[in-house]
Picture 1 (tube, one colour):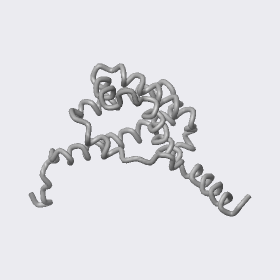
Picture 2 (tube, helix red, strand yellow):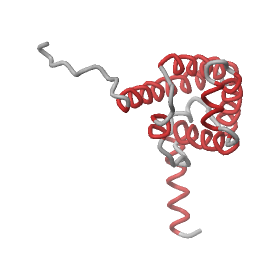
Picture 3 (cartoon, one colour):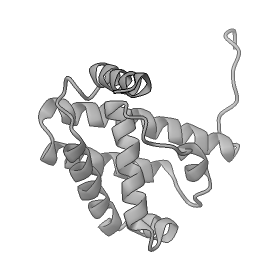
Picture 4 (cartoon, one colour):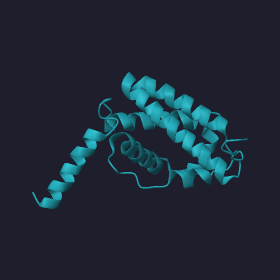
Length: 153
């Protein structure tokens, strides 16, 4: 094995040790199943379905693969995801906080159905942080953030 191949293998092993999903038993198969089941529900949801289907159209296979890469990068630190979720989400018209609340509800439900409790809790915690970040980014892009107040105000 070349030194470069050894270095890549060592880096991969180190990432696996540090990945937040490793102690919770998260696997690539679990990520695949969760992502596919969740987005199956989201596509049929009366509030979320029209938005997802309008934005993604016929590109669901590619989108699901990208989302599996995203969650693999978040949970297992694989580094497979290369994209800009914030930029993608700020371009979507009509997304409101109620949509994020529904998204999180379905995500929690699906994670609880498919994952062991520790893994489900981790998936939910990460989704909550991601959802909050996306909501703040969308609000900022729309100029909807409340004004910053000074400490003495």
